[in-house]
Image (cartoon, rainbow over all chains, first blue to last red):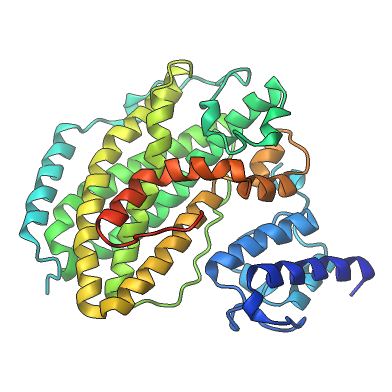
Length: 91
Length: 291
């Protein structure tokens, strides 16, 4: 995980701690959905925060629950480029 | 077995069917669609904008405000397209099943009218915005018992319809807006008044079934789901791609800041006022935290 992404993932971890304090420490490979760290409403709000952190739009298709299921998967998704920047995705 | 046994519901729904026939119009010939709508005009009232009342709104230029009214309009009509698609899928799944036989006659009108609404909203988006914004709804609830699923389908529908109607009434009555914009919204409002009446009737009936089959735990569960859904509906009006299209800087940060801005809470209450009043009066959702 690059230094930059580490800082961004730490921001995501901070968001989870703030919005679901009962979740306790969240590991990179913890499944955010199966463990109920994020329920359906929190998941969407989490995605909005992911978009703010990475300044990228997250396309809500069937891949979203696969690519955004763990902090490590999110990191890997954006290391590989993630979605195109907003201006390109809406060209 | 027909699980909807309330004969008063059947009678009221029959009256709505007659009204649908009497009020019928051909949407494909009803509107005069100009080739374009000018960008240098307002497309919706300012007080319906998602940034209205926030410090960010005060710093917008006239050009940015006009652009924001355009792209928030396209977002609003896009939300209608996606919301209607879900409604149609769920209504079609239930029409002429044993459970919904008492209202299947009216569901034909409902499905037909919703299909036509979807057409004119999609036409508006594609003709004047050249796109429909992507669907941002995401459902992750596990499979629900049938009575709760049926209730949630129609409760979501009537909540969404009442929120949309809040906008339709105000846009449809704003004489400063282009006549087509007024007409699309006023027409939708007229049709939706029947759909809301139907939605409230069937939600009352289906809620009784939830309580009869699942007791207090069922009632608690639907209250949790409805609360989440109301928050989700508010979320949909705050969208980074809309701010980006309107030329506003830092659209993702702006989205989250505006969504949680304290100045917006009173508007959310007003927008949801009628639907929250109905849910409270029926004892379905009696108190709601900040949305």
